[in-house]
Length: 219
Image (cartoon, rainbow, N blue to C red; front, top):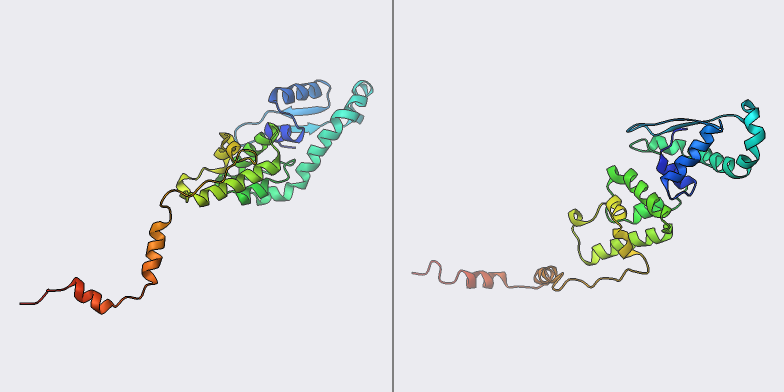
């Protein structure tokens, strides 16, 4: 299978890349997996080695792997298979990060959906989850930010891209325990109200024209 470190860390609920690398090295040393380092645009590649081909390793390692490591690795492989069809539909060919349940809800709730930034947003979202933030809270933060942008009439160009919203921890201020609904800016909306009032007022336009042009053409 082909998978990058962030996806694998999320699948195994690991918070540190060093922990993943250490576990990977132990599996390679035990002869249970083969690993090929990836490069830019091409994630790392893994191949699981059948236990029947490693009988000498099986006798020493299999009990521990069977009870602790193997189920997790098997789950990752199954997750990759599940998302194989979705991968084909993804613009950049990047499959969703399998353990994430509510990312699509976060994406739909966010006020600015930059298609080209969706994959980076997903990675940033996974990073927040791995740091202990609940997915439900991230979805609520997206909704709160949307509400705030509407109240303050924040222009699209000044609305944060979703990946930056997560990566620079801007979302923290919009978490349920931190968010306070903003008050509209002073004078906000008055110009629109005056325009609507003008458009709905009946005027004697002939008299208004005479007043504005009074004296023109006389003498």
